[in-house]
Image (cartoon, rainbow over all chains, first blue to last red):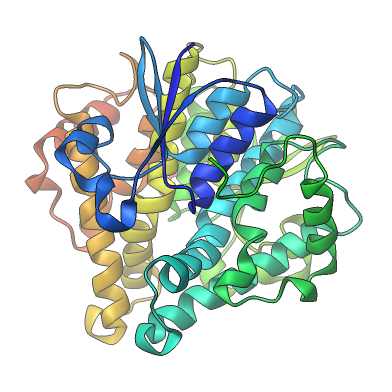
Length: 203
Length: 203
């Protein structure tokens, strides 16, 4: 299986894919895209993903897969990162859906505005307040979900942990205070001790 | 397997679960929740889903599953609604992620504001414009994805079609004009001809 990942290194969505590829020891070719400079909206890239977003994984002989959670589910099927028990699998999907619908639109969007687009909260106005609050609410749900647990589902790390870790561990860059969330902080420390952990912007 | 679905009949997210249960002929008990009156924020319901949202499926002997896409993935595993080919599975997930991140926050949110909360676009202001545009962009992506195809992935209906159908077929209630999207309109007609089709608010 020959794999090419179109990605932007500061992207937490791309990072989820890079972590899974590293955890599973799968070789791949990385194509770095400067999305802030419009690289994901060129005709060449739109032919690969008409939705104009990274990450995209291209599987030789089959085609492209867009959406980080579709990519990591494809890669991790049959591995220890995806439980075989049907109910535990459902809980992994549940956390991934939560990440995408509640945490990512808050934490990731605010981080992108502040860090990649260099905007200020004052410039962003009401949109900033709404998205920041959404992220704060999501972090509170995650904190409750991690209370008394080492990993989100079962007793080993799964796609749920990788998905939630991607933007949560850099939430300080979006103006949140991770130190206020003891369960999340302990989980982040545990995640960083995994043998396949790598920093977010490492190619 | 004894199943209880906590749901609100106008919800497209709940409808996805009801359609899958009906398509697969799985018996279940429906608990109707009036979410507009706060039924999903009571202490009793928060004990089932701390995130305070419907739909939730409770599996006897295991526990609750939240998030519509986690629920339908759990129910459909091993059925014809979820392909066995790994690449086709990935494309089903890709469309479901797209639905949740782009179409639902546009079309479903605007529909909920107008239809369930009885707000007007003028009252909603900038938030309405932003969400309406997001839905319009998503419908354009879906229209391109359906061009020349009967179903989104493969040659039979899958979870991808159920997921996207749920809010798309009622997009007129959010102020879109489905007649402007010929591929979507043909796909909706095909979906409504399926033997397990049922209207959205049918218990």
